[in-house]
Length: 85
Image (cartoon, rainbow, N blue to C red):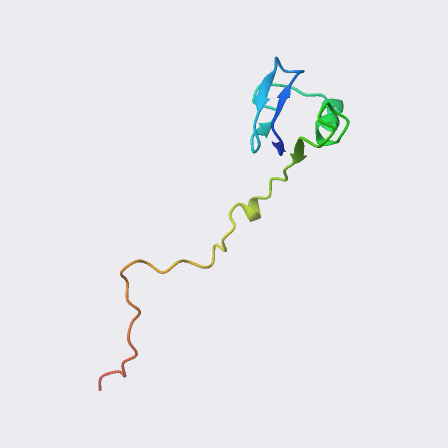
């Protein structure tokens, strides 16, 4: 999967507009390896990379550590009390 890093109009796909952050190619469109290399490199009309490879990493889905939970709103920490005899 590729992510658009710079806005461009795909002249090989009926002038489809791609904005920064879009997924390339759009659903239902097949793209040749040569076209991907052209858009990922500087051998295109804008002379700059327009897309970049995005690795799907299931372990890194969010930026937060799943073991750490934010404190619940309104919940107080228990007080240290000595056990009753």
